[in-house]
Image (cartoon, rainbow, N blue to C red; front, side, top):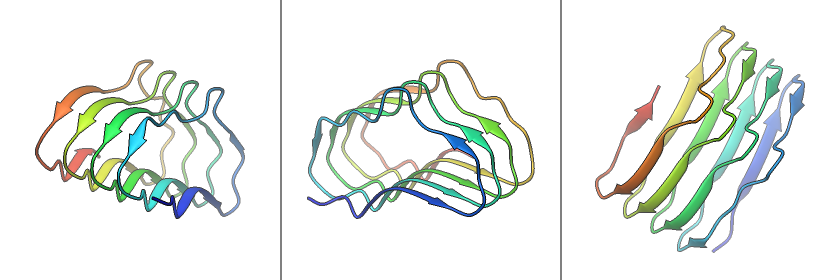
Length: 120
């Protein structure tokens, strides 16, 4: 199905996008928002972005960065094997802070239940 919003950049922000863009295998439903950056935030995104093998249901928001924050994201972003249900929020960073994330992010093999918030 359609991807309503793939990437939305809103506000006064400096950003450097992905070196290797998102790789998507098979999607059975829409992704309402894949990545949203909102606010005054200079950021450097992932070197290798999110990789999916098969997603059965929708992901309402995969990554949301909101607020006044300077950030440098993951070198290798989230790798997800097979998802059978929705992940309402996978990662959310909110507030005024300057983080440097992990070099290799969370790796998930098979998720069969709903995970309301994976990392906040």
